[in-house]
Amino acid sequence: MLSGRDLDPPDLIALLTLSVPSSKLAKAGAGLIHNGHFQTIKMLIEHGTLEQKEKYLKKLLTGEYLAATAITEPTAGSSFSNMKTTIKKKGDVYVLNGVKTLINDAAEADIMNVFTKRQEGISVFLVEKNTPELNILRKMDPIGMRSSPIYEFELKDCVVSANQLIGKVGEGLKTFFSAFNFSRLGNASAALGIARSAFEKTVAYLKQRTVGTRTAAEIQGLRWQLAEISTQLQAAQLLRNRAAFMEDQKQDINLVSSQTKLFCVEIAQRAVGDCIQATGRYGCLRDNLFDLYLRDVKVLGTAGGSLEVMKNNIARHLFR
Ligand SMILES: Cc1cc2nc3c(=O)[nH]c(=O)nc-3n(C[C@H](O)[C@H](O)[C@H](O)COP(=O)(O)OP(=O)(O)OC[C@H]3O[C@@H](n4cnc5c(N)ncnc54)[C@H](O)[C@@H]3O)c2cc1C
Figure 1: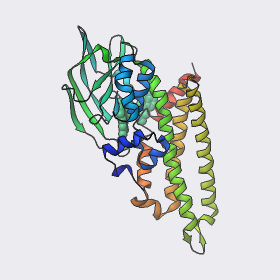
Figure 2: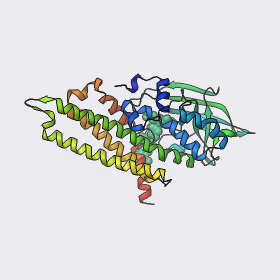
Figure 3: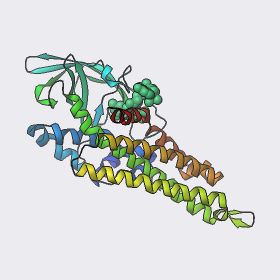
Figure 4: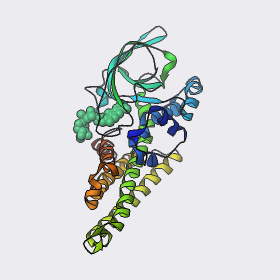
């Protein structure tokens, strides 16, 4: 089976153009879901100007362009409102300064939405590839989602035209939530795709693996374990589907998308671990990709908003 390890950027873009669902892409490597790409599309659809939509949307939707999202900084992660990347208005342009880190596809992306801060609040700007004041400082080495490389980069007196502002100055949180409420469903779908892959491989393996005088599939403890995983995956999928339906109906999914990401990623992390245990040596060999599933599903618990941040958001709704 093709793995995300084997894919080059042109293959990735080709995959994007096929509009393969996140759950399927994640079977080959969860990095292939390209969160930042779809977040940018969502930001443009909901907050972009007509000019921005004409300039970028078609290219992003066909995969001609790849996009990235740059929020995280060396000293601002979960608490991203502490970000230090600044903007200054100079006539018709804005000047951006700051360092962003852990940014998927920052070097490959044709366009990047960059989150900045000043007194009025957060503002989001589109920065194009080959902007001279955008310097990639280093490529980083994550444990998972490796098919989408991550980078640290600096913006040094980076001049951006006012036309590149998404939404309004100081209203970046609206832009953030429109994209991240949505992309949490992509994270959840990727987690489910990974777990389903591990589950299907495990069922197939246990059926043919002989343990003593019987197949492993006849061992009661393993049968019950797989029965539980299948039930949990089914429940998680229904939650994801309901959230996606609500999104399609243009309902507010802030709460349900946090619950969906939390539940699906936790179920998937447990399922992958249990499948490795249930398959013995088979799960321990890299050929069978369980290491890819384990590393990717772990990263999904942090990238795009950690599970703790999801819990905080859910609790905020409860105790409002
Ligand atoms: C592989 C990978 C790809 C990424 N890609 C991107 C990208 O493309 N663009 C981008 O902008 N960012 C990206 N990120 C950054 C990611 O969004 C952050 O790592 C994530 O938001 C968590 O921030 P942090 O790592 O700084 O953790 P910290 O904020 O330092 O948190 C440390 C721990 O404390 C927990 N924690 C933090 N605050 C609270 C709280 N209030 N209550 C309870 N627990 C809390 C966290 O959940 C975590 O367990 C990526 C990260 C990774 C690992």
